[in-house]
Length: 409
Image 1 (cartoon, one colour):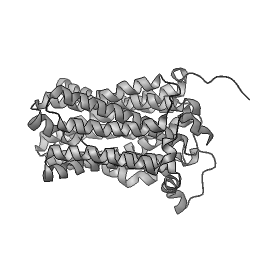
Image 2 (cartoon, rainbow, N blue to C red; image 1 turned 180 degrees about the horizontal axis):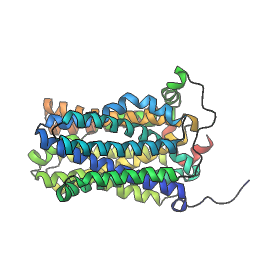
Image 3 (cartoon, rainbow, N blue to C red; image 1 turned 180 degrees about the vertical axis):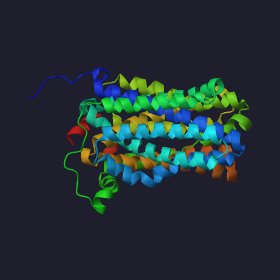
């Protein structure tokens, strides 16, 4: 048996290429979303069109998640990442062309964003499934922490970069996002690992639906995916932040910007801390504990009438979410065979993305019916209640100590 210790993560060439590409892609996605939303609103002055911008990018992910999972289990995942970034470059070029030739053609912008959303669907699924192929499985929990931190850093830096570039350069924001996507494609092409799935399953309906079947049959995966979905569904608060900033805390747009940034700040700080813990203990109890803290932070935020306290609650909200994401992502990826990982990642991704959208919708509808503060407060209480229920329904998760113990299961 080879006793040679694995290469440290930050000296693993393929892992560094992956993190670099993921960060560049994430910043570009966030900056481009800000830029397109800004320019569309300048054209139409209709907030409904901002909803259509979001829908144009989300709907393809919902429609294509089965296909994206299937492709990630049959084609070299490095190639998928490279092609998706190339498509993103083409999308940015098309948006620039539209803005130069007919800036009022919102329908054309939305059509291009549908292509952008489709490429994001394939990229997100492949990027989740590829990570276990790049690092030794014992290092996978730390790799997830680095990857999640990179994603949160992109969420924090991307909108700020997009707004700054719009203010300073106008259309120059699109050239920067184009360059970031090009770097993302280049890093994917430079990976040396062999990533094609060996001996893929024969094509059949059962194979297409294999992700659902596997999630349902594996109680660890089912419990982790379903509780995170429900927590985000009932714990959705980000869509109502403008109401809190304007009508409850009275802090205006500057305060709103800080409020939107605080969850990412909390997530990033905790993510960086997790990268320094080689083999964390008591992961099952910590998973449920983080979700309880997630719900309690929502309760605290809903009741706060002090700006700094609200910011603190949102920071805890993001920190608790990072812990649950870190544990869930590691558990799902380690507990899933490589040949099934793309389809399971697709199910996991669409459930979380859908719950984000539906969570904001749930919060908005309830706020219209019972008021903003009661809607958010009730969501936090339900999140805590569901977590306690899942603690009892899925004892296998709460018994997990070290995540790397799952490698042997």
